[in-house]
Image (cartoon, rainbow, N blue to C red; front, side, top):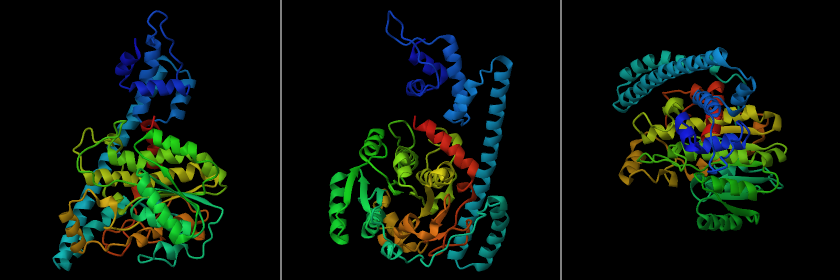
Length: 459
């Protein structure tokens, strides 16, 4: 059986089969002497089918390797396969129930704010009463943050310059993705102003060079450079990792895309917003892990959004292959993934002294992130009163706070907004008030599951 036939039989991409051989998960298949083609024996295909089933239920490479090492055969292996699928079925049932609860919650939030807009406070209060038990179910006590909440003297109106004032970053190196526009520019400017050697990573090198020159001039810090980074191009990510020699003290995963109107996919076939906002940054952070370890105490900042409140990661259909594409929900699940990454990375990298946290920068209209919004729709949002918008300098403040504040020493796996650690989601908060964080975004089991899924999707 050829590699194409084996891949089709197992429902796996040919690239996955080659990757598994390259990392030693399965034995390399010998080439036929006469044809020169790889020839898969029935036992090879059986192994690949088993691994494909394990991959489908979210097992990591390490778990699949352990399964093969156990050398189980016959009824015992069949029994384990059955148990794995039963576990997967229970997990999906739980997800369906959670999504239905979330749908009810969002419907009530719409009704609450509609009543508030209409000035009907009695109706709003009645809806809030309906919301209360749902919020308790979505935020059980054992899932809330159990450590001391981190607070600061900064808030909604604080700027990045105010947050970093008095902090010395000389001798440290920072890399900010998407720093050629929007809040990324002000994040890089603040870090450079404190003395950090700052790398502006962006797709558009010409734009990045212009920003770097401006930051060098305004901060009088000559150590501001640029690097090309396209989060949808694995070659670009790998090249940046190869080019970055020495320790990296601060990594700000800031780049992103929002509300792509039509369903689009990465070269590997994954939904574009999830691939850009999460998978690209996941690959970059793993590639830069040696540099982060070499810093002897690094910080990774994962820029998320309050939009995460609108959807968990839908593990059964991340790529919108079986459900109708919704730009807002696609963005929302990618932003939940940004938080879950911080939760999982905090556990994986704690022994390396790497602190990883996530944040919501605020609602910012004057940003390239909103480029897919029609101008009329954006103008309506500005005038609706639903949001109190921040300036770019204010929007960068929480990123800079999480990246540099001494108050966050030893703090990891948490979510911040307005330069404060967020409290559990409060549906009645709006405007300058914090929006809170969803329990599912801080769930350690979901975080670890996403880690394993992300490893597989990045193969």
